[in-house]
Amino acid sequence: MWKNLNKIVAYILTCYIFLQIILNANENSDYGLILKEIPRLLNGLGVTLTISFITFFISLISGFIFYILMRSKNIFLNTFIKIIKEIILGTPLIVMIFLVVYVLGMKINITGKLLLGILALSFYMTPYMANSYETASAVIGKDQKIIMTLYNFDFYTRYRYIIIPQMIKPLIPSLINNLSSIIKGTALLKIVSVKEISYVITVISNRNCAAIEGYMIMWVMYLSITIPLSLLANKIGRRYNFEN
Amino acid sequence: MKINIKNLTKFYGIQKVLEDINITIENINVLGIIGESGCGKSTLIKQLSGLEFSDKGKIIINDLDISRQNIIEYQKKIGFVFQNHNLFPHLTIKENIMLVLEKSKGFSIENSEEITIKLLKRFFLEEEKDKKPNEISGGQAQRASIARALAGNPDLIFLDEPTASLDPLLTKEVLGSIEILKKLGTEFIFITHEMDFLKKFADYFIFLDAGKIVEHGYINKLEDSKNIKLKSFIKNINI
Image (tube, rainbow over the protein chains, first blue to last red):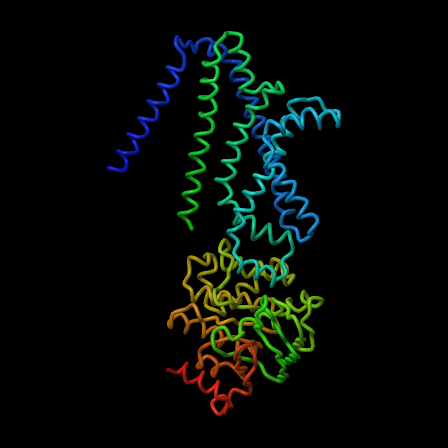
């Protein structure tokens, strides 16, 4: 009872502070200037979500390939992948977007900013996904590895029947957090004029001289996606820990 | 069973765990390995089963050289039971056995299922077939592990202290399963700390001390041994 009461008070206080920030962000705030263009905002939100989900699925696969190569017994391959991983992890997303859109795009003669943006985000997320797989695979203990060796299970059998089924549950919260990072990361694609939500809001707010209102609405829109995702990740994570 | 070990030496880092082991044993069904904790019993059984390879020396079991070149062929012919049951936790008991039969021993799904059901009946686990390892007792899980080791009708089974992590009641349950192995005429090599277990099942024993075989012989010679270390070991065990 006391615990729940504390929680309720914490939620109310946080919501109050959040609302105060939104409402008092600017003197004479006029959110109507931005909100009058709801169809464009929704369109931008759609683009953001589409980019995010495509990136998520690409990096889900590329991350798995990365994870497998990281575990390769081939020392050259293993080292090569580890170096690439460190380079990507140390590269800011904004630099990755510029590299892919303006360097790689020019070299391979692709000018579609949306496609290149998705590629940039996918490259960027690949090592994070690989790390998620690596962490989740810790659930496979040494004893199980011995049994797999003893019975000479091939690569497919090991992954299809033993490793992946056990990895899924601990992997889900981490994947949801990665999806959340991708969604936030899409905001940087506005620098290459991809018409996702932050680009749309920037255009509308510039036209109406309402930069602060624009950023406040952008903030709320991103939070409305990422907070439910975060809650879902926590819930699944708790359930997994409980089951174990 | 025919075992021929020549100059077997194994290091873990700079520590010598097995030192120049030489032995030839023939015409036995069950071999028991005994010794104090840390004397190299588990290392020896890992070498014999091909889970690890020695730094020096040779092991020939039933005329097959246990080397990296032959390991796939050899491991198809053996089963292994660990201290902890080591069943895959996300699979049911039935699936644990079927997976080995299908993917390791090459049986069809239908045959695997048929053999699995027979094994589960033999080890009194039929009612537990759809349960996962965490839904059954430690003794039942260890019995399932023995059934899995027996899947595919191996020539030889290794048991690494199969009752070590069980209470006396569950130990009795598992010993019943090992008795089944003995009755079936299955050849097996086991490690134990329990003299009753050794005397009941082994035809031949090896006593290890500090990585060396200090005594070995047919089980009826165990009590008559003049070896001081073995006498002291038996005395300490019986206290």
